[in-house]
Amino acid sequence: MARLFTPFSLKDLTLKNRIVMAPMCQYSVTAKDGVPNEWHYVHYTSRAIGGVGLIIMEMTDVEPDGRITDYDLGLWSDDHIPAFQRIIDSVHQYDAKIGIQIAHAGRKAEDAPEPVAPSAIRFEGDNYKTPRELTTDEVKRMVEKFAAAARRAVRAGVDTIEIHGAHGYLVHQFQSPLTNHRKDAYGADLTRFGVEVIEAMKAEMPSSMPLLFRLSAVEYVDGGYDIDHAIELCRAYHRAGVDMFHVSSGGEGPAGKRRPGNYPGYQVPFARAIKEQLGVPVIAVGMLDNAALAESVIANEDADLVAIARGLLNDPYFALHAAQQLRVKPLAPKQYEMAIR
Image (tube, rainbow, N blue to C red; front, side, top):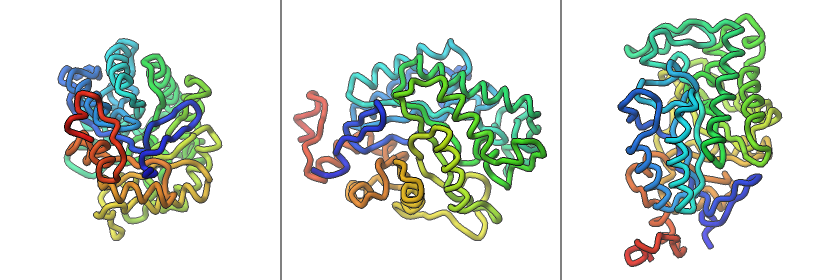
């Protein structure tokens, strides 16, 4: 049996295979109210039908002005719960598990009248405004907003929750020396905000439910942090309660002398480094939509799961096709068995 199609368990989360649908913003909330609609329902259900083991729903924000755009998802109100629950129930019908990525865009909130951030440092680009620095009391209230979103996600029926601490959004902004110039406790300790968010969210989750954390392992802007800093962040976050790291990179600003990779598997060494240093399970991501490559990542024990983003936009049935290529009997819905054997 190909390792890619062996089950994986973490606490009470058991996946039928090692393939994860990475979170990808759809910018499709046409009502601008944060509520998932028919597009999201079909989008996620179709990937469950397509054989993915775990779906992580796109960046879902803890307050309206925390969205990248007004077309993004939100979980700042109990009114959002039924629409998420409908999607989650549908995904479960097709033997897939599903989580939600909880986030705040911080200084990258393009449509917010006044974005907020750890420090008043503007993100480069015409779409961005100079953010207002959060007060210490506002930071504490922001932690509570993350916790409230986690509580709603649990009520909606998720199997896991992921914190978005990558790609230059608010949690990443707090943990980076480039974007956190604060003079209070949240500047003295770059892990403090992330740790408090983790602890607050864990308090809202069943003890049997794993908490994931998406991390940028390196920053590409000149002067950005490297893998050593990321490993220390992970140590603090793991102690606070993170069960698995989803290892990406960049997103904090325009690349400088160090350029991001542009080839399949370029981020896998980051995932392996964190796995080896901490002894925790990790998800590798980055152009892994090739069955043989995805299999090698798992078989070589570089990572425990492989996440695929754009590849699953291109082919919602990647998991079924990968099984065919690796000579594993695809677990296709009976309606599709005549075509996928």
